[in-house]
Structure formats: structure tokens, C-alpha cells
Image 1: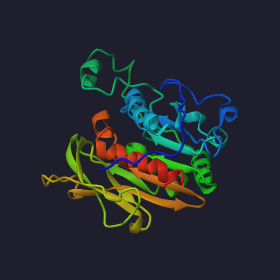
Image 2: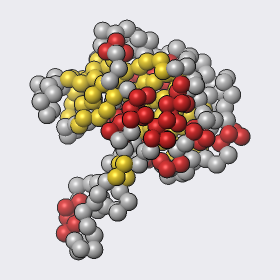
Image 3: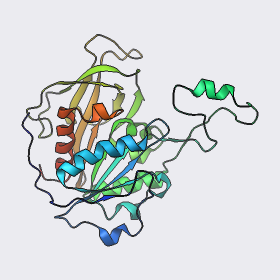
Image 4: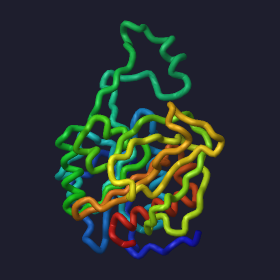
Length: 279
């Protein structure tokens, strides 16, 4: 696929590390319409914020679009997202206030070294409030672009307002394994001319709530492997207008290799351009 040339900006500002809070005083640095700026809420127990930042940096650097990163989920509000033209989320809906042993393969081993009465089993709670969900919905309604990626569909399980604007909800996924991503029959500028591609990633199975005509991507396990009785396929991306703004969801995103698949990089760029009404 021939890559398009971005027409948005010639200057890039990448703010802070992935662990930074939502930047204070961001409104004073806010982009004008001719110079858009994005805010990305990233990172959770199972998704290292560094790989997400590295992955997205490539895309936004090549497009010369300014982006700020934050892990401060509690700070997400109407005021903090107002200065931006684009909001991205790549994290799930869970936090673990009581702590946890670890997300990696050594979790069982680590727990054997702890006293169960002093380090109880981890318990997740939902973090997004309905006020935060409303803030995102109002942001898009007013003309903002919203790009939830990968496991951000999980947040829909605990926030009605978020789910209304995001468009669907997480069901589950099998372990990492190769699957194909291809465009649906629904024509859209984001997927125009794209060819199917293979990624080794978590194939997320999601429930989609809106009109089927807005589904633009589908994932399919070509080896015939299914998940929880849901067959080999799932919606893997959608795009629609929401009020004066726009929403795009794409499900791929658990590893840098998947995020940097050339076809997927192109899809991310087109999604960002479409959300900014430049495509």
C-alpha cells in the first residue's frame, strides 16, 4: 500500500514519559485548529505504558502531530481533555488498589514467597466514573476525535456513558496467536485499498452496539481456532460520526510488533487523519 503524506503539521511536541500525569497548564500550550494536539491515556497492569508510548511515538512522529501521554486515569476530566483535539485510550477499566504480585509469568512463583495473610489475592475495581464517561461523550459531541484502541473496550463494561460513545464492549481474548485483519465490505476512507494482514496478537472478541454499516475491520483466525463459542471472527474496528465529532476503534495493540505492522501503522495514521477531519 502506498503511504499518504500527512498535511497537518511540521512540528512535533512529545511531552514527558509514559508515567507522567496529565500535563498541568496544557491549555496554555493547546493547539490551534491548524496545529492539532493529542492526549493519550495509556498503561495498566497488563499493558506496559512504555511499549504503548514507543508504539504511538512512531505514528505521531511520522505525522508531525503533538502528543502528550498520561497514566493519570483519575485526572481524566472535561477540563483536562478540553485543550485537545484528539483523545486516545489504550488501557483497560481495572485498577488494583490493594496491590498485586505481578502480571508476568512469575506471578505464581512470587506468591509462594508471600504470606497469604499479609498479601491477599489481588482484587480489581473499576476506575472510570460516569462523570468521566460523560466528559468523553461531551468532548466528542462538541467536535473532538476519540480513538480507543485494543483493550480500551474493557472500560465499557463498567461505564454506560463511555460505552455509548465508544460503541461496544470487550468480551475476551485467547492467548497470543496469529490471525488475519481485513476490511469489511463497508467502504470507508480508512480502509480504502488496504490488503489483509497477519499479526501475532491478542485477538479481541468484542460486542458491537451500533449500526453494522460502521464496522470497517474484522479479525479472523485462519487456522480455524475459535474462542468461547464465538467462532473464528470478531469485529476489529469501526468508525462513525458522533455529534460534531468522530470515533474510531481498532482492536489490535498488545505488542509493538503488532502495532508496527506496516498495514496497521497505515490504518492508525488514516484513523487519526479521519478523526481530525483531514481525510
